[in-house]
Image 1 (spheres, rainbow, N blue to C red):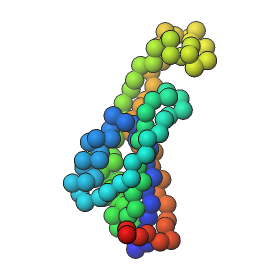
Image 2 (image 1 turned 90 degrees about the vertical axis):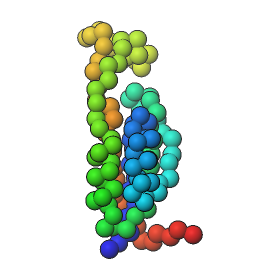
Image 3 (image 1 turned 60 degrees about the vertical axis):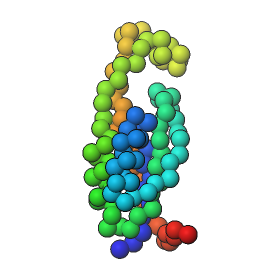
Image 4 (image 1 turned 120 degrees about the vertical axis):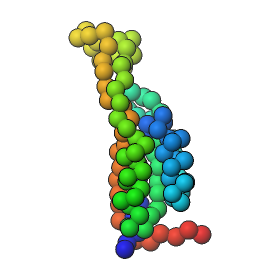
Length: 111
């Protein structure tokens, strides 16, 4: 099966548990710090080089450790971002989960 690159953006709060689970299952990842544009909070971007047959198992690990949850954003934060907070004193948003891209790779080497 062809090599794949998994690029996943996850919430920083999910990083430790996910990283531990990946290592336990024999997968390694390169971790990059990133920032979300809306909440301006820390994210982690993971890069994994895999054989195609490993992709379903890795995606299952992500599903288990990157759950979406709700977070309340205060009115002060909304005003600082330039949003008109007049509609409410807080805003509830979904955070967490994962955005995952699985890309075909022409060549994958570990040297």
